[in-house]
Image 1 (spheres, rainbow, N blue to C red):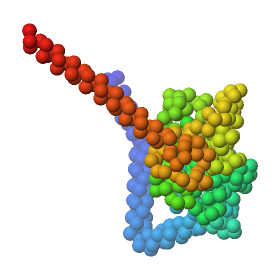
Image 2: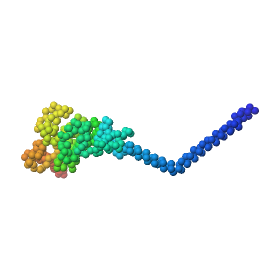
Image 3: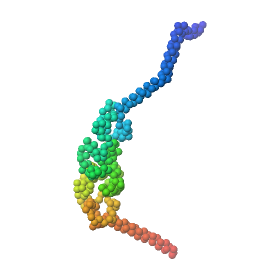
Image 4: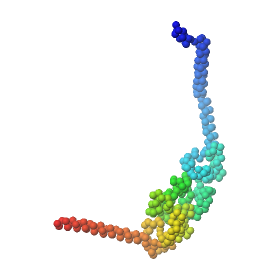
Length: 349
């Protein structure tokens, strides 16, 4: 009897509660149906879609007018520039390319192509762009043979960007920098190993300077990881590179003792001027069998090797080649004769 009453109490629902619950369920079903109908009607309304399309196009046009950044058209260039030491120091595209950098979004907008916008600087004007910040380096560069060649119209001569890079300029201390101490020989070789460029009549430079440098102790030590060894810039100077025939050049014969005796090189060593006249990039390709009777246009270093019209370095090299071959051939012949004579002696017995 007790269990029955308990069960009856648990399941008992009054008529009022049933009515309330039924009303709530009816309202929920009505609300769901009304929302679905409204959404469905909006989706089927073509005017809504047309309006949304017009709004999206209009918004895109406004955004494009307000923010046409350099990255939108030049993503690779901007990515390179973000690894640039100039970018890390707060410079932007307009500092080199001109124009204005006024935009609410903080990005370089289409208004950059106004005012003093120069776009891509010509090779003759690159130095002027860099001089705005690097005055002393520019002053030194304008005393170099590279600048002299550009002034003469040979625009393929080296300028700032050929050595330092364009948009990926890094600090010299950065191992990935093209002007890093270890990377400078390869940077110079980009031009000086180019046979087509170096053979031009207005250059007339041998294109094996990098190969001959590789035969030196300096390169071998550098290649092994030693940093306190001479590279191109240490001898020819960074921005004041001049011809070896120029009396003010660091590689002019009379100036070589001072150049080699610089601090951190061979300081304090009394280098004989005659020794210093020897060719640093010495190799057979620098010497030929041609007879030279007029040596007025020849540099003092090469002139040092001549006796009359003969290039002694070439003929001495030929002599030692013949001598070495003859000596080796003679002793090889003696070994062969000895071998056959021993065989004949054994056959007799």
